[in-house]
Image (tube, rainbow, N blue to C red; front, side, top):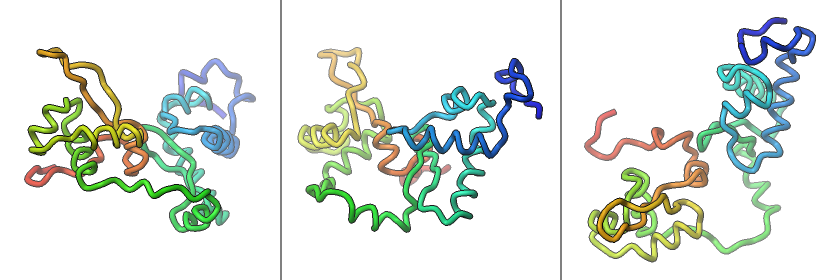
Amino acid sequence: MSSDSSETDHLPDSMLASDLTLQAALEAVLFVSTEPVPARELARLLQVDPGRVPVLAMQLNHALAQGHHALEVAEVGGGYVLRTRPEFARFVDRRREPVPTAHLSGPALETLAVIAYRQPITRGEIEAIRGVSCESAINTLIEHHLIREAGRKQSLGRPILYETTTEFLVAFNLRSLEDLPPLGGETA
């Protein structure tokens, strides 16, 4: 077995893993990961070309589906995760400890949308767009780990800049911010 990758050229053919072994290794890495793992990091860990990672993820997904497993590989938040298939979520939800519902209010969702599309952005800029105070909404979004401070704007008063987090991408099932739907009036 030979490899196209310069990253694995130094390995003898006997040490290059088969696709089945690589799929199992991918599954193991994703199983223990608590956040999305970027393709480049997976490629490093699996000692393969980064271009093989999406193929291995697709092959693993196919194998999981054919074996009637409740898990799937998904590309979200700039990386790959192993997660429960949507049709089995209700069973997992029964197992979880009851927690207070963490739904976001309308104002919090509006604020999150402004930040997602205009980041990095200051509170003053958000309030100018929304026309109302958004301090409470920003605090809620920070508590839910959907936004974070991204530094300070180089202007008078050096206001805090806000941006979305990887948790935002995962919560909304987005691979990257480029997956956000176009705003009304924008064309793709």
